[in-house]
Image (cartoon, rainbow, N blue to C red; front, side, top):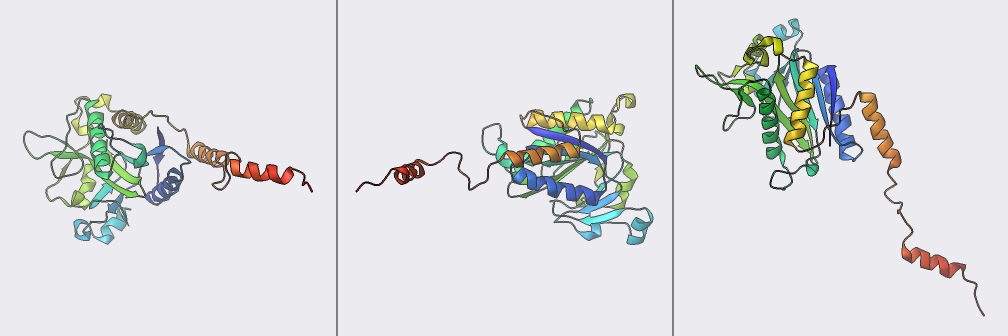
Length: 271
């Protein structure tokens, strides 16, 4: 099961803290797979393989524009998050997921699945999208030039639990991508759903896009989707699961050996 939770705008530091909290609960089996869906204030994030030189703006300019910088443990290089961009953090236990052939899903298959889910999301708005061999993410073709990236993807996996995820441009100010070399790819063109749809009047709100993204993930990973209404509800669910779980060293029933010993002790001794 996938439980999506839409949070609206969340500070990036708080987003990191929430991911750690929920990843621990998923790892303990207190929560099913959770998909956090939100939006961040302007921020640059540097993945494990990032080169700091791919940030083109000076520290002074970033500070003046209120753009934070975070070095994190996801894969990939540098990317931008900001208003009008749907950010999704799938905190999934990969041990619960299977490929179409029934094999347990690994990190690479999971990323490919995320790409396909976002490609289908684009298709639901009549927008053609696909992948580029050797690159991660979702791209829109352009007959007059290079493909334009509409969604960036980068994950981290620890003990089978995923974190971080994707950034999908809805109405993002694409001029902000000039602050960086997106994903470390020179000449990297970016786009947004607003630029790609034929009729902007059909453009969804960020919350509606989040709902449709969750449904696309459910269909792709063949899992039922059960939305959660709030963080409080999610935490209450985890607390309830903890109360219902028996202690690890408490057997569900008395072992037969103990019953036999108990019976021997209760029988009177005979001379």
